[in-house]
Image (cartoon, rainbow, N blue to C red; front, top):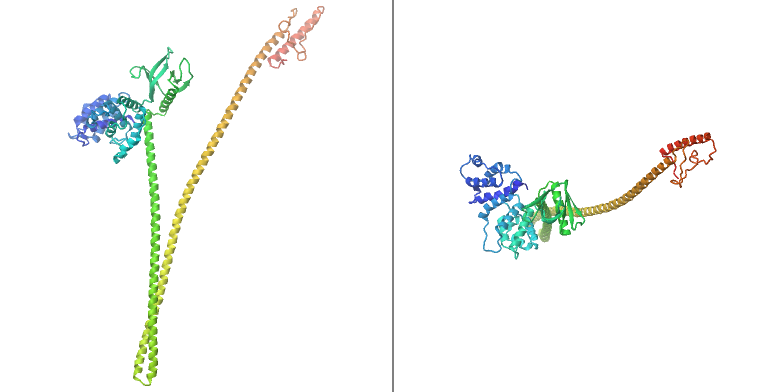
Length: 617
């Protein structure tokens, strides 16, 4: 949230406070006064003609917030320079305008907050509110703010009161306005039984921490840079600097330490009679400080490291970053909730589809039973009709037989009745035709019965296909569940493998470090031995140079017993160096020849020593 957004929130309250009729519009004269006051507190030059020129094409009526925004952005907010004004003055101006209209309290009540505390809570509300207008604060941010206040008062936050408050109105589930929040604080449910001074101190502490970007403040002992003496100072830590004052009223600033990526914090051992020491190192200076106890030292070092991290990450406010993270977490929770709801709806739809298919199967079974009953009834009715026709035919055949017998018996006697008998026979033939037609109808009925049975078989096959589809859906669901479980097991196995690999790598790293330490010790020992050997070589070179100096003719041989009594030159290595003990009666020619030989041998020995090939016993 940038500076422009913070200023717009406060100015929005000032604009709505001037809208007395709640129509969304404010007169130009009131906007002139508001613009002039904003320019004053924002330390920018005010142009009284700019507002008239901006709205000269408009009528003399009031101006809406959408119409005032272009002027506000162009002539006021675009000219604002961060750090050239005090934002608290802007907040106080907008609070003064809006509190007269919207903040109404019972002055006689003992739970009503003072005006200064209400103003700070209003600023905290604006900081934690959503970036939507009208400004509201979601329940999670309300709970976060109340927990910070209760923590500053060293009391435990009671979530039941807040849940009861939100459960009273379902509209408040999406957020509450600042006036509802202040009304809730004035009821005293959250701060019941706590002194007003403690509440004011807690609200001021939370206000300085969240709105003032104060990461930590308190007394520390600081060592001077010149006199190197210890003095107790009140320190205030912000993301960009660490300031220290003579007292906690913060009137006399003694210094300001700028924090950047080159700063670091180190814990120091106790010395100079001070304990719990630590230092803050910058490029130019090192500041030594001492805390009251180990806990305070840990809190201060952690807070300073947090401020350095914020500066390195390019963030100028810890609580703005925390607010964005909480908003992202709420959005993620909302996405997960929506995904869960969609999954539940999908499962419900599948359940409903399954129930619908089961109902269709039940209906099909019921229809099949009804069709079977109808077929049985039709079959029974056809059987009854056939039996009735058969009985009637048998009766008629018996009657015909009796008539034929009687006609034959009476043929001779009654010729006249013969004609009647022929007519009777014709009637019987017609009856036989009707019987044949009835038989044809019976055959047709049987064919219809076969067709019904085929239709029934088709319905049964369709039912089996739907049952198979339902079983396949169930199998797919089970396979999906098994696949999810297998993936979870594979992920868990992979995490265990990575953990074991990490432990093995850590163990190998420790072994490499131990080997490196031993090698370093061996290198140091070898270097020490090398230096000692070099020293010995130089010493013996000096001694040999002294010993092997050639002796000139007539010189007296120096005595070697006093300085190098224990040194002996091996004659096998240097045959030219021979100490000859001869009498003084030898002639000078032989002595000169011996001196010449001795000088040549010394020079040869000296050249060997210079090349580093001389053997030292």
